[in-house]
Image (cartoon, rainbow, N blue to C red; front, side, top):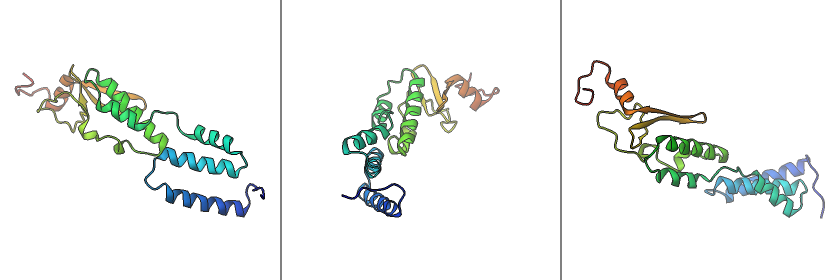
Length: 168
């Protein structure tokens, strides 16, 4: 067997062909599988023995929890503390980002678990979800989540001069 040398045109062409073939075979597969196979192929072409190449490939897969597991936790949220839901949503965003995926592939943000939000609250505020203590998730991200009380949201939406049945 002729050893492959790095950075030759033949190696570059071979890698392009392998990537194209691999991409074709992986249509619809998980991003983790794509990372695993591509990293393994590159490691083998760089001269690593199969066992080391496989170990190298496994190390390339992000260590975050799988988005499906996080999505399941989101669907099973117990409505007790909306901050927990915000943390799960941020974790899902990060896990998907690590894998080149999108959270929308795992959950429907418009139907997050929630205590019943009163009809006078405009959920375009945005109010994503509410817990049993009337705390509302209004934003989440890498720096944490933003929570507002139902009363504060109502005040912001209705204004100080409102005399509706909810504000009296």
